[in-house]
Length: 156
Image (cartoon, rainbow, N blue to C red; front, side, top):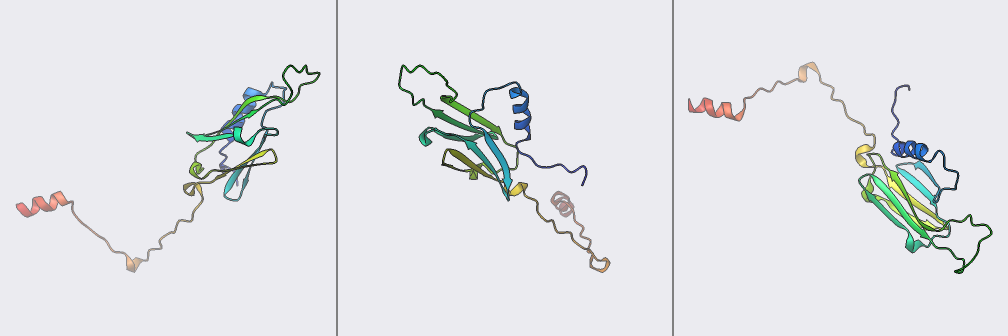
């Protein structure tokens, strides 16, 4: 079907991320996959080496923010020959479209992967609308006046 708009709550985020990060060559902290499964969107973020107690997930004004801290395990004073594993604080934000139920977001952390499940809001789900089928002999015309006109007519 041509001309049909597809609902994609992450479209703006993907566009912005592509523009801002197109020149970045270093690996992204917390790389993610986002997909739709039934009546939910699922976000999976890789967070290896992050303590579950340092993870923070907030939803505000259609923005989902994931914050985490990865501490270096090397003893103080270590001189690295190769240091590819980043440490410190990380944030990842997703700008969500309308039509998601942010009050029912669910999250779990297992094996270094944070999984966030966001249900589609009831008002955004497609629904069937019944169509009345009027018949010529069943029509009824209802006439009436406003309350003010009725009161004015009775006092005259």
